[in-house]
Length: 92
Image: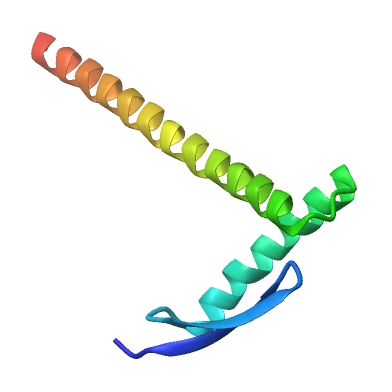
């Protein structure tokens, strides 16, 4: 896989990182993070980059956690449906 460099400019700092991913994909992720950071800054009035970064990480972790729980619930529901179908088929 090709290595690419991506510029990151967030919260008053900038640096480059080397990534295996498509640079456009990484830029989409950075842009999404910028949206989250802007929401936090606008809703809290906070300007401390460390505190904003911590809140952004909590926000994003919450999104991931909820997504994993949704996947688990969907998987459990799917198993129940399959079980019901199997029971109906066995009764015939």
